[in-house]
Amino acid sequence: MNFDWGYALETLPGLLSGLVITLQATVLGMLVALTLGLLLAVLRHAGGRWIGGAARHFIEFVRSTPLLIQLYFLFYVLPGLGVTLSPLVTGVLALGVHYAAYCAEVYRAGINSVPRGQWEAAASLGYPAGARWRRIILPQAIPPVIPALGNYLIAMFKDTPLLSAITVMEVLQVAKIAGAESFRYLEPLTLVGVMFLVLSLTASRLVRRLEARYGRQARPA
Amino acid sequence: MTSALEFTGVEKRYGELAVLDGFELSVPRGEKLAIIGPSGSGKSTVLRIAMALEGIQRGRVELLGETLWDGAKRPPEKTLRRLRLHAGMVFQHFNLFPHMSALENVCCAPVDVLGVPRAQAQARGRELLEQVGLADKADSAPEQLSGGQKQRVAIARALAMEPAVMLFDEVTSALDPEMVGEVLNVLRDLAARSDMTMLLVTHEMQFAGEIADRIVFMDGGRVVEQGPPEQLLSQPSEPRTQAFLRSVLQPGRQAPAQD
Image (cartoon, rainbow over all chains, first blue to last red; front, side):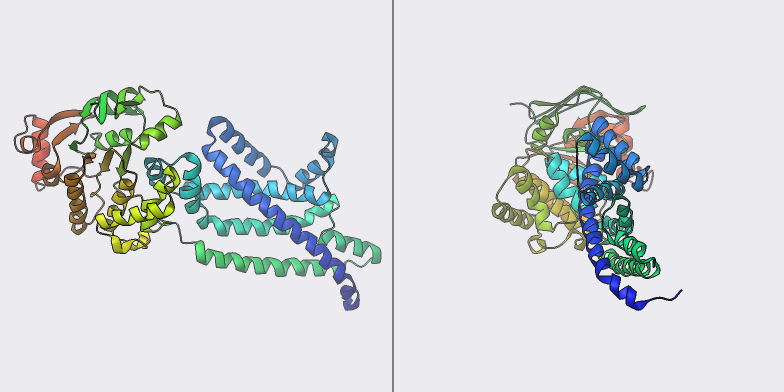
């Protein structure tokens, strides 16, 4: 089998527009994962028996079921409940919630690394719970775990092709359609692989830089 | 006038271990009180309960005439927070906020908790840093400061909230010997010039004798003996006090356990 450069070039524009959708899904999914993950981590820590327990079970549940099943579930079951979302929004939601559960565990490690004395100092100064988290605990808990969060976001980026299963026109879906039309899969699939490789490597390098900057910050005072 | 702190029949346990057992203590407003005793005698726990960092199992604790702890019942978070504003605490291990400069450490709580305008809080923060001899360190990060400097920032931070009662929990125990003096000087100055109620848990007997109006000797979760420094330090009547003071003042013979 020969690599047909002409055909590869022909499919490139379509693949690039698919890549835009992939990147959109990644960035939006990231925002959901980072914020919902933080919320879950804080609730788990501060929510007491009921709310904290619910957050813990939710995290456990999401981490113990495959992303593909969660995607299908949202895509096929939500409309039956009267919630109709576009495939892309459904995909972003599924990716975001799935990785929020992983991010919550990362944040939790950061929160646990803040020494008890910091909580006590904040309490002794009369800080109410909300301000204690915002001003004292999270500014110390988050920087050390930024590299770990970055790694999960790269993992999420590499999971976006799953969205092709629910008809999102992301880059793999475009490649499959191009292949089905011409009966040539080598070129589009190779290009998709190269795109993921280049972007993942770039992102990994970025995470290593973050590591150099934040990795050794958790020092007691 | 009501007293600053009132402990009545307080019992505090960690599981089976009784840390305070029928503990009684009354501290009049403005008093400078030193609490001494072997490690594990419950001294620090007294301060932590007064700061509302820990609850009790039995008895009653009043802060400025208001009930802080009444048996094992936990008061609503709102009440705890309001009462905490009357007290300030300086910790053995400083507990400065590492992500803030020295000045921010001192002025963050007035801004975040009391809503003092930032400029005003910073001006006051600079005054307080000057008072503890650190005017030139306002912009330093805690990690750039020595232990003694950190502890002086921590004292300024607690003072910024203008508490009626200040609790000092072995504030020189984690310091290198050459830095103990600078912190004690700040405390000496504070005791002389302020009408705050001060409770000091300390191993510095000589210093305690110098600044305290009264010294309390604790052992086994109770007050064993108390009195004015000159009496308690030189003519203690209880055998346990005598034994403790002997071991502290002549460390060669039987060193007390340090924690």
